[in-house]
Image (cartoon, rainbow, N blue to C red; front, side, top):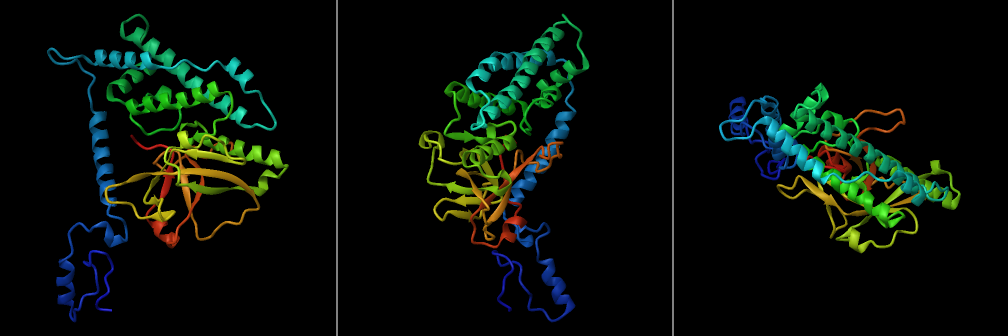
Length: 361
């Protein structure tokens, strides 16, 4: 049809041309840099591309920063590094007492979450122990009291350019945040488990973004259901119920569900959840990421998958890439979340819709 338009702007349509010259003239009227609508994508793609280009440029500039002395009246690189180390040291939380943790959360057949919380406390303890020891040694080395090793020098460079130190990355959770944001995130994660530790039992709702190894958490919740009803765990799968009626999950979800778990803290990219229509909808302009409402993960035996739902992949970080561990789990991919939609799934697949437990900032 002559009136058909391929995009919302009406710029792309079959031209009423009769000769090659007319077709060429029509094509020359297109913009030199086509908008995302030319490829069937959302206008927010322009923002994402610009951010990626700026990030690569700034990363290249940052890598060329010289650790030379400061100018007249300014702080030297060593002073900046030492100040950053002190600021981190002063706010570092104490490691969890694992012996007390063992007594408060004994290994029980009917409560797999006790094992989950003990493993998580141990993982964060390893990170805290590493941070405490390396910061202490670095401050001594920068004053000339001990030898400045290559690892300690690398720690100092990372402190100077606001990057996660390699020594901490090896024992810490997967994250793409700069050091300043990463450190605040670690404090929030440890605080979440401190609350769990003080409570002495599993909380009614879980901040899934703060869990070091979320796959073990979801497996533990599935095990609890299987052992409670004497079911075969291989026949169980999660039914995902969106609790978009909840605004503040920590205040409103004060009682745990009879079966399964309540979770919050997931972000969505490529679209948004419409709490009024209770389904996926297009992203609003200039909104790259949105918060996904609280979810109820409830195990169901021989559950039939709703083919109309969009199986949204959920990752730990926005890079969407990882490696396969010997346990069969990915270092990044967590699981699929089935989200209600009345639009053909190809639209969301083309938009790259995915869920994440943590962003870059």
